[in-house]
Image (cartoon, rainbow, N blue to C red; front, side):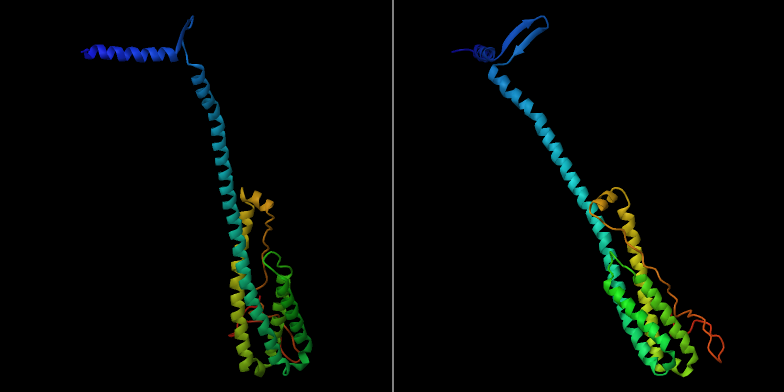
Length: 261
């Protein structure tokens, strides 16, 4: 029976013999060089050659994904700013349409008693028609001449209110007071909606001019928003008018009177 020591020696000898068949050792001036068999070297050399390509693909895919994420984030930022502007403009549309409906009611209520004020009434009617047409054609991207027509309407209605000072009975009429109060309420809502719209426009313009969103805004043709501005106090301070046989009437702050913008 072989001893354990001899058995171990034989096993080590077999392993050394197999390793010698796999590895060729050459002596050189630089020392001992270990040369792996041809098949082994070819297999592992091909793996090492493939590694740079894999790393390049991983880096490239990562860069593309990062670019897509950045593009989506910037696009969402611009789109959100534009949606806020459009939502604010829709509120202006609703409130201006309501005010446009109130103006003809005021004109018809005072027409009979102010028959000789035909020019003033026609001016209000024409200004209202132009403002309604501008509102129908306007949008958040292109307000057009909406501000100009609303400014003209405010001035025309302010003149009409000033003319009412010459008709105390008409001015104190229940229907006239109710319409003036409704106009004041409508104007307050218009002013609030207009301020919200202008704030949204300012925010949009800031986003589209800030790097790097400005690059994407130019690429996707995001236009700058246009502010809406017109006076808020056409009724609170109507124009000074002089009537034949009457004193000059100054505009003042009266109950039921307010601004039409």
